[in-house]
Length: 357
Length: 123
Image (cartoon, rainbow over all chains, first blue to last red):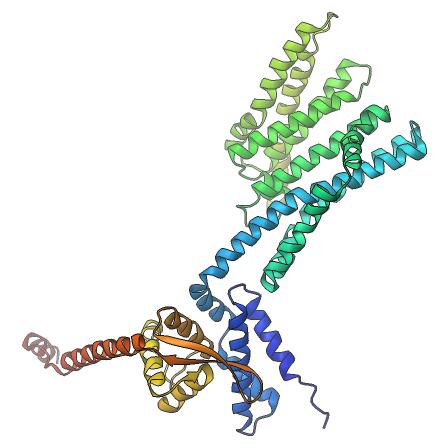
């Protein structure tokens, strides 16, 4: 017969950890339940059971983890309150330190590339590629939303104080210990793509990355009340009015940033501008039913159309040349919104027919 | 194995624990063992749910808990009845007796004549 590899201490610790990970036990409760399991196992062993058999019965008699979590949560209300404050501290520290770390990393890249390649095609390619990779990283990070939250939840349940204290470290380092000179360079370096590299492509890709960060933040915020995973359907199906207005604002920023790409032709610039609205309008129409699509599209583009018209007309009035550019951009915008709406709806109908057949 | 109504179990666990602690101070597992012995293993209750009840009673100052080292070297929390707990136990005991008497009386009360008539007609 093979010798038993059963480890009672490990098994007890593992089961208690499962209950503790639900987040309603104090350290004293852990000690008490651990002692109970040991006592119960020893008592059952006196009935000629093996250590493993005795533990299994003792564990069953102790009760299901869910029931114990529920009962302990009723009496350990301070654990819940403390956890809330721990999340608040953690959130505040991460909101400050993560962008600070990213900023330092990004600016280090700019300064390094400029130091070695100055103004050149190589530096434009490197910086543009860097921006595109960064954008992909942002969306990858957003897709890992569930894994990240499970990790944070686990750390909170294991040791709240530890994770909160660790989260203060980047804040202390970047707020108080970083030399002032380096910080000045950080703010200065942010404008490198536009001013130092003298590259429209680098500047546009930088704006593209920033706008994707805004879109990622909007996705995270407006997916809070949705139970499905983070995907296009969850984001665009039955959106709230606030979400549509925010989305419309970010799309307007994105569309406006395309003007950096000076193609030499006002029609082509307007077409590129309109394409951004086409894609957004397509997505809204594709993921929603016919009746409400018009309402959603209206709320989505109302702010953008208003801003483009008002700001564009003001800009035109200050222009020394006779070019009235607003008419081109607003027309392209409206045509593309309608086209996106029609194509989105017809694509959805065709897909439904295909699924039905 | 008796499985009591959840609410009934929840409301009766406190006075049962107070009664067990009336004899001597005890720790969680010992209280469970006492309960098992008295009911001859008939009562089916998740043992772990005793501890939140003990915490509630300690918060109400009916019992007092102290950590002590067992022979095995493990820490155990021993509970003892306080004076407030003794008063509470007397109160709850008389309340339970009252309810018990009432249920007995109603159970033994003869069925009403109209009911007897209905039963006769249906036969």
